[in-house]
Length: 190
Length: 207
Image (cartoon, chains in turn brown, red):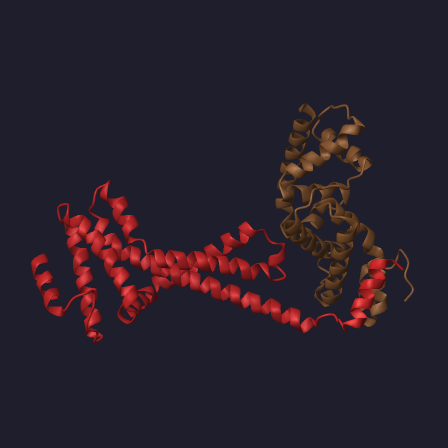
């Protein structure tokens, strides 16, 4: 099966159901984004992420016929990844360890701009401040911020991934931002 | 080829893993929808039974004052049915959440909707008199259930006997005697803890 960037997810699914080798194209498309997402919400080590990703893709393959086009395929696959990662994280409760400084600067700067907060962002402190804030806000809020800002998912997609309504996502996102800023400022003051 | 990709494809081939059939997912979806409906119906029956018990118990506190009424109200709550309503509301949430539609709904809305449906159907069951039939049937065939109902009535009656016995309380005791008579008419020996002679005596004294 010939695949390029224009091949739709729907075509990839049909191809995978016809021939298992075509499932490899789905893995190619989603391996890196899911790896990034798993790392963001769980801070899992590379070897643990490998195991998780294998488990996730096996689950995706087994449940391929349950997918319905009422939801974006990326939301569906993220939902599986999200649920499996959260289950794993609750058993292991690892510390968040692997967060890029560049992502922090954009993320934190965007949050502060949205809330009209002027702050000089010391690059060196941002990584630690963000790690502290993300570790100390509610788990659900952390997931929402990562999905919204790092994975750049829309509220509709976040609702589909987390299994709630768009309205609820909007409300929780506001609270998530507020809590993050508060914890970040606590870190800065201490 | 990435390590993960090669490992996943190898696992699929070596273990003969195949995508689960669509029939399974459709059946599963209908199964959980059915369980949701059953949970709501049982919740409705529970609510109707609660209403029935509260109506019986309300005879005691209609004529009472503000201090007595709350105590009597709490004493008349049938906690068994309340617990059943709570359990089946939880069951309704669990089952609906596993359907395709339920995946995308908020937990709070699902719980609220199942409680509302149970309350509405429960009211309907109560209005058409099915709850009274159920109440009598359970009191005549289930000794443990009858005992708890009687204990509830006894507590309310004893509470009021410590006060001045008012007209409403007398009516409630008569109601208890009516139920005892019905129970005896079904051929049970030990209805509401006593035999028919003392029922007649009680009635005479009250009237």
